[in-house]
Length: 171
Image (cartoon, rainbow, N blue to C red; front, side, top):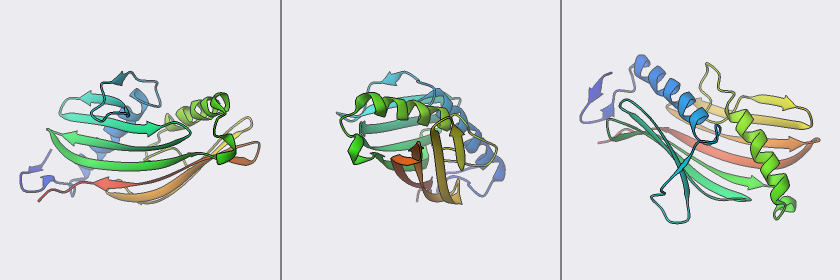
């Protein structure tokens, strides 16, 4: 791994980007999508999950339930190198319906475990299971991306999230 002290990670190194991508797939499956254990939050009122592998460290921090906002950060050798922000939630008519929201979030977790060989900060482009359907539109790559995801139940949009992120290059 090339490390440039003045910039952090050398993100021109395809091998390093591949390692980051692999680490993100593992971290996603081991935390929220995999019902990972919550850790002591750094910010009051947030839920946080973490994953470590060697020099790599991932932390997902979010707040809210029916509407939620969160941030995923990856550190390498104690330097932040990748970040993603996400937010949105249940369609307003479902606010207050905890049971349906929990069903929706369980489907979302299944979707988030479907990481493929191509970079996906959330889930695949499309996934259908029974009455549930997930759709994700994304522009960019692991270095710089933005997009949105939605979950439909029986053809009706019940959940949406927008997301944005990419690599961190320090001064």
